[in-house]
Amino acid sequence: MKKNIIIKTLDHEGKGIGNIDGKIIFVPNTLPNEEVSVEITKEKTNYLEGEVSEILKPSSLRVKSVCPYYNKCGGCSYMHVNLNDEESIKTNIVKNIFKKYANLEINPTFISSKEYNYRNKIELKIENNNWGYYNASSHDFIKIDNCLIAKDSINKLIKNKDLFNIKNGEIIIRSNYNDELLIKINTEDNYNIDIDRLKNNHKIIGIIVNNKLIYGEDYFYERVGGYIFKVNINSFFQVNLDILNEVFNIIKKGNLGNVVDLYCGVGTLGIAVNKDKLYGIEIIPEAIKDAIKNAKINNQNNIYMLGDSSNIKEINDEINTIIIDPPRSGLNKQTLDNILKINPEIIIYMSCNPITLARDMFEIKQKYDIHNCYILNMFPRTKHIETVCLLNRKNP
Image (cartoon, rainbow, N blue to C red):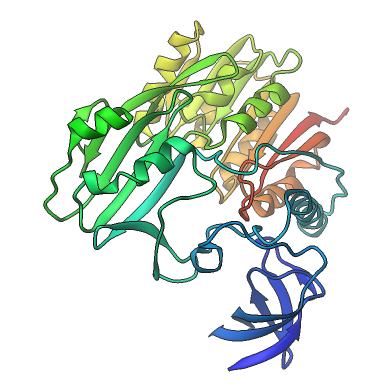
C-alpha cells in the first residue's frame, strides 16, 4: 500500500518522520519538507516503517548519491545530502538529544574528516561466491564490488575475491596505516584460498579461518598520532584513524594526573593522554594482552586489569581523571555510581550513542559541568555519531 506524505523532521538515525492516519512513520533516505510516496513495509502498534517509492517534491538539500548501492544497501544514511549538510543534521540531532534526555543546552564543536575511503575495517557476507552486505532492514543480500567508505586497500582485495574460493560465509577485512591486511573468515564450506597470489597482490599479514590461523599472524600494528598499537583480529579499534588522531589532540591537553581508562580495549585512549599513572580496565582478555604489550611498545608503565567496568572500585589510589568509552548501551548503574562516588576532577566521556550518553549525563551533571563537547564525524555518510564530552567537577 502506497501513501503520499510530507516528511516533518528526522530521527536520531537520520530517518525521516511523517504521519499516516495518525501514526508516525519512519522513512529512510528522506529529508524534512519533502513530499514522498511511501510503501509501508512494517506495521507496529505505535508506529510504521516505510520505503520511498518516489520523491514527489524533493528538498533543496537533496543531491544524487554517488554510490550505486545506496538505495539497496542501507549501510549509509546521508549519501543524499552533501557533507556540510550532513554535519548540520548530525549537530542538530545531538543538540536535540541532549535537550530531551539530559535537559542540557550544548554548543558542540563539529570535527570531520575525508568523506570517503576512511574505514579501515568492514564485514561482508559471502553468498554464492559473491561478496556483499545485508540490507539494513532485512536479510536481502546486496552484492558489491566496491565500498566507497572503505579504504582503497580493502576495495582492492574485494576485487580479488575469486582467489578465496569460498561459496558461502562471512569475512572481516582490517587494514592498518601501512595498508597491511588482516583477514578473518567463517564458513562451513570447503575452501581453497590462493595465498601465494594474494600475497603477490596485497600486503597480507594474516588469514584466520573458523578461528584457526592458516597464514601469518592474528594481529598487526597500527600507528596513530606518534603511538604504535598492537591490534588483534578480535580486538576493538577505531575505524577512522584521522578522527582518532583528533581525539588524541582533544583528550591529552593539560595534566590529568592519575587516570583510569574504563573499557580501555587495547589501551588506545589511555596511552595517548598526559598522565602521572594510568589504570586500564577491560573485560576482553585478548584486548588486555594487547594493552599490556602496547604500553611497553610506547614506553609506558601502565597497569591493566581484566574485568567489568564496575571494578573501578577496587583501585586503591587517588584518581584525578576517568576516561569512559563504553559500548552503545552506555554505563551500567553500578559503574556510574562508582564513578560519582570516586568524584574525580575530570571525566572524559567518549560515546558512539548520543542517547545513552545524554541519559548518563542527566546523572553526571549533578556533580559536573561540560567544559567542551565535540561531535566527531567518525563515520561520514552513515547514521553513526561519535561524541566526546570533557567534564569538570563542580566547585563544592
